[in-house]
Image (cartoon, rainbow, N blue to C red; front, side, top):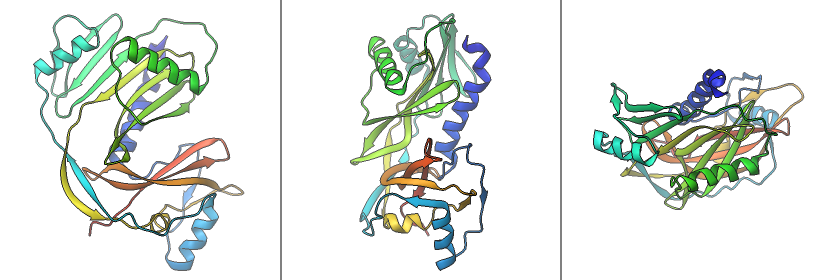
Length: 275
């Protein structure tokens, strides 16, 4: 069944990775907006008020100095790839190309990236005629699959997003008592609960430096400005997290809320200046 959806799964995976690796801002594709000139001072403040509805009080206090990190890149060996092969239940010889070690069978495909410790598992499924499930059921099915296959890992929070025919789940871990959005473990399931994709990271970090953060209010003033007639983005909160940008795991404010009261919205803004 999932073979006919493979291009869509690939696009969904790309959008998840692109959002994490290439941008400090994630805006849902469903927002048909145009960017307004950012402006300064009162002009920018009016533009922000026209774009966002604040449903919480912005904190004006900073969070002091916070450590930043780099990826401790250690090339993946064939022996390590073989251990992941066994973990995911594959047997036989692994093949390799410039990007990864890989192996396939009737149940799916496993890829172990060479330049960073990330494992990707694409699972094949047969047609299953069951009713569509809600987000709580999707999380339950995901955890049961991980536990059954001895793939369970520690996480702080499971964030679920719906994209048409699929649910994507990001399992957020902790780093220095902050939620770490840099390289979350991921799963993609269809609306019937079939596992389509699993991505697990085994990345190690090394300390880079310490930066002085500014307040959530300061970060709010750096939000992108959008215009949508008779509609605003509702912001329900802002939290200090870790986020990967410019090759650095660094503090950022995650603003989250809803667009048109139903579509998820989140945007990451750096919590410190580096110049």
